[in-house]
Length: 167
Image (cartoon, rainbow, N blue to C red; front, side, top):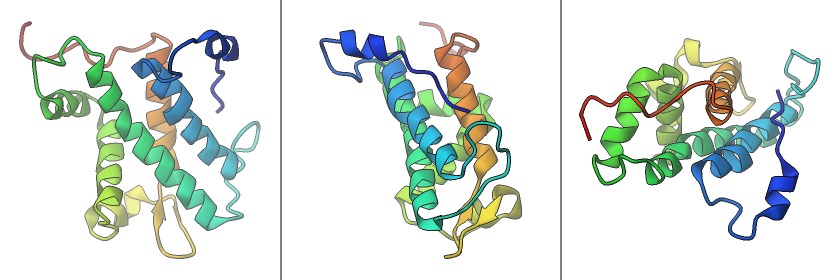
């Protein structure tokens, strides 16, 4: 899974390369996911991960998780709901409809607060691999979350359109 970026679009930009949430999703979050997949040798026809450098794979894993969770900051900032509801309520509404994104958020929060033990990161269902230094690793979670955001930037799904209040 590799995301095609429009490099001509980037060359023609006169302002910041991350001006809109679409830019952040495409240039940072999905590219961090690609870096993780590349590290595991999962680009192209190979379907079986190859774990050559566990520490580098885990670094890229954390980058992917945290950048996927930070999409909500950019999405909220550019949304029509920005001054209508709190960021927390905005994010929680979306997470309630996308369980995979909620898991990503839980992982990012656990890493942010150094909570590497407990139910979030140690349950069997969350582990595809356990790295040599004992930290869990969920390949499918990143794949599913990146697919959601890829569909979003390509207009195949909408994320923030079903809030339970009127503007």
